[in-house]
Length: 184
Image (cartoon, rainbow, N blue to C red; front, side, top):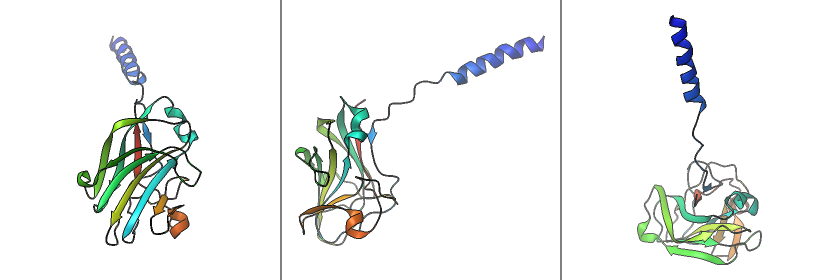
């Protein structure tokens, strides 16, 4: 008689574990791994950006960029979030969104800014950058341990007025801890 109770109980256990809810929708644009460090930048003005190609944004077609997350080291004198459309492969296009965040930035932790006006995910490239200035050598924005992924380490340096990858500028292979959160 005990055998008859075991079979229905086993069937219920298998049914319970076999019926999983759908996995949550992945809604993060990211090229980075976990925070490891941050680039040591001289005093000056910079933009640190990640560039997402149409192949990386295709699964988000018809959705919007709602917020941006980034890891911040010591707070810079100014921090401005910028979102750009497609430009050239080595430079962003038109400015789609900008917000000055200096007073809201927390040091040595992840920060998040909810866009006041969400940005439609474009058919072309989407660039997300943090424009920073500081008066001393500083590690303002976080990065992972690498290796570099294409688009993960763009750097604009106001001193030379050029966009280039951090890898090309320094030989260091990392990705900025900058992530876009897309509507579900």
